[in-house]
Length: 328
Length: 120
Image (cartoon, rainbow over the protein chains, first blue to last red):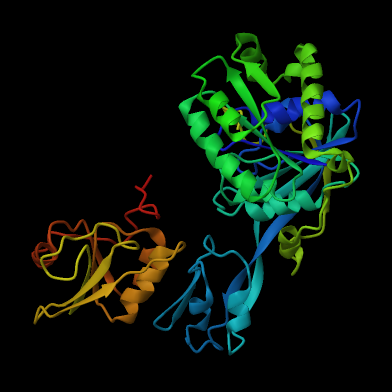
């Protein structure tokens, strides 16, 4: 089974839920943790993984041989993203607009276009707290996060319960993380912003035909509009986490809630059982729901992902890697 | 000289539109005769600046007058050998007068961060 934790709004507590769910289940289920928030991963702060392998994730960019190009403009006409332009005698390639689909190469009548790999970021994998851990890291200056999310998902072990910490928002990287999941846990806070972005996230999850459960974090602030919305939409709220100083202090220190306050473990296990009852017993067996994913497959063809490269194992903790001031 | 000005409408009295890639119209003006040609802009979801630069270049402009120009558009227009002037305001006619009087800034580098964002 794949459980994707998403939110719409950033900083609602996705990582808190994902990390504590994994730590609560590890003694009962074979789990794996995937931090899909490749723009600002932060689960490593709580799980302190040991990274054993780093893979480069690339996209293919067109390269134009000017001696073969006759400036016909077919490539520019074909490109939905305006990533290649023919202006006068020049062909311009805009790296950050290019999605690496290769259509320009296909339509070029003179064979002037070849494709060259361009690194977007890396996927790191290793072990944390007795389970496999992986995270993606988008290179600074790169705009395209989805191939990294797809690569992360290719590394999933079908025999383990997958806990995917999705990126915030409702854009392509979030959809890439949610696609193929068995259930979407949407974390929100009971504020107008929380409600607004929850609605957007519910829209995305429904488009993907995912069962939805809502978790209210920082419960007690704001108003009851999130509760009313969930009731009206028939969305279950299997967990509420109060707005509490002790929880906030633990978070700020990078200490998982269930490590310091073991009573919370039972609540996360209860959450898991609620999820199972919602998605049905069929999906609850860890191997099911692991559908072949065309979206994911596409990017690995054409050698966009280089072979795994062994690197010396390193421990990453709060002082390394991207920092994040919120729960993302 | 054939001058192109981003505008909200199709005539010399139309207001200048400060955006390059997503301006409603490109108004091409012959500097000598003031004859105009309005081209409706139809930007797609992605790469509006690149698309607009190709449109303007294909219509044979020598000078581009607009509010701001992002990095992709700047690269495209420069590749076409088009001079870019920014900071245009008022009507198309006023912007043209400002350009002739040397009151507009020549943009040798992008003046916006793309997607109409301010430079950071």
